[in-house]
Length: 419
Image 1 (cartoon, helix red, strand yellow):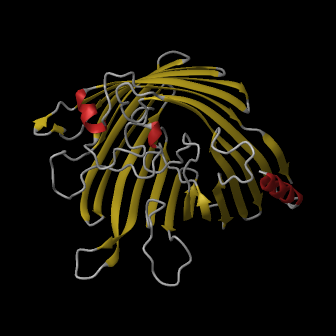
Image 2 (cartoon, rainbow, N blue to C red):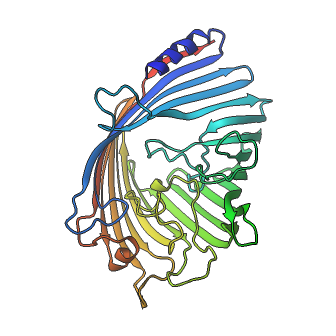
Image 3 (cartoon, rainbow, N blue to C red):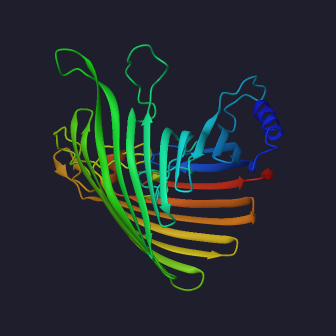
């Protein structure tokens, strides 16, 4: 952190002529008790307790035709570095990008950046994870007026500066992508459309000679929103086609949600998500399971991360029916969300077909703002799983599968200069 402080001082000294310069930080420790988090805990196994922490230093700069952002972050678990350690390798760049403003309608942005669209389902920053997500990408933005926007993004990844073509490790999750995203606002309605082409590189051994191949999968679909004083609603559908690791892809996603403000501080909501999957006894190599790709998956399908958060890929899919009871007044907020999960495709225990019901999860969260720069959040979740969930995830459904957490977020503003 001494290096970061030194860089900060140098940066402040060099922005006397800037139109806008901001230096801020974030420090976010979070305590967690995991006892069946992301998968059912084994019988008589002990859960775990730990504190993780994110520390960020944020630089934002704007002058004439340029915007620039640099975010350093340090991610750690309390105790993972010795108390007298001489080195700490947990610090990295989360964002480092510059944007050129060609006109009030056209700009382009290059570098390490968060990419977030709509409800985070396909592209999200995964802010819940202490490390979050960012991409090395080029982004072209066209905004012909305040109600319409078109983004075109490109990414090309390599492991190093090579001399000849080398197989990429897919550390980023993809070798390359290209996408176009459009959003338009029409009175109370909003319409988005995404066309994403994602390529994964691999070594093909099927022919007489090994060769490097990039297979491309396409994700295509619209999202429609509606919002009035008391009612908000959205529907979305995406389809995936193309190829992935030499397998044909045919997968789908459907979702809908309605929220209604019952009285001044209370709102009720109901929703459903369907992500296609593949029968467990289907030996065909085709990909039938929908992949949310770069989405903030912790935001969906229950906070205990049983589905699509580093697990469940290529599985039997999911149907999630849920309700939301939310309360918000002044600095306090609370939310209760029960989820009813079922498999979208058939689950088998040997040759025996199981019931598709996976179980019920109940999530309860609260939040309070101590100050404009300090907030406290906490939550408790419990999973009531079925035999079918045991087949998919292992562990013991009859154990206390629960998760509790408390998080404090500090976001101080150190310096702000406007010329």
